Length: 366
Image (cartoon, rainbow, N blue to C red):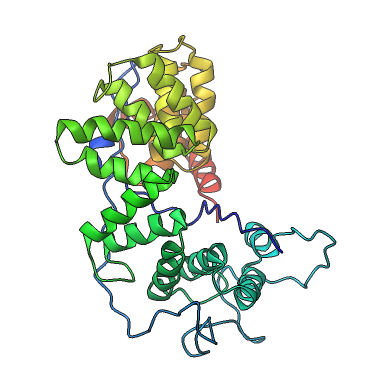
């Protein structure tokens, strides 16, 4: 019998970012604009006339009219399939493996086969929900995704409960119901779901209740130790602010570093700033510049601004006003302007400005 699907979904994580955790420091060489992140706008409540499929029904996946599987002549964004590959491993996770490799049509078909054999296979339900939720291999359908998440959550899948909880809080695919959504997050967090712990922590941070602040720290710590990068960044912010914990720049730097290593751009920028200023970690301008450049090439506007400032002042990198202008242009293209940099690169020749424009255009990508 195939082992349960291990649904780890970096694309589908529903994470909320509260303004209370906006924390981007400034370089000590000169104050610069800071990044502002706000809570994503919640979708309007949506209702669906579709009836949630029942594990006990003959047609578990519903009719072809409601389940929009691909036909041979259809092409969807992100859709890809591969021919069945024989496997001698009885424990091979074909559906999960196809999903992880980007073969979403195949993932859909393999998960469907799983449910045809076992109508209570909740990991397969969660995978189908993820595909509908993200529009991978099938037409995006939040309402249909919510149906599958609900079935899987009722059968004990904490990831499904966590995602459905956020959908209820946002009113996406289901009627908006923050209380019911929070109850699902509580349920999933009690089963150590990292995403649920993180989102619940941020909700608690916004209440202003001291007991909620204490609990939010513990939830963030739980998610952070499970290597959820946004939770690691959030915990670093609290240590840097001394909010809910004793102020400790060293611990803040350690959490920012872990977040950066796990791919969190905000954590990477924060760690770069602490490195540059020598706060909570030995000062190292050259190393800070490397982190800034990495985040800048990933498209972070704050990092692009900071790299531009480093090149303009010759801190951590050789002074290069053309590079400074190019990175400043990249940041400005994202809405982050800086009067200090405008003045710093004002003496460039026409030829140097043209070079900077070409560099900025190249880094913007296609």
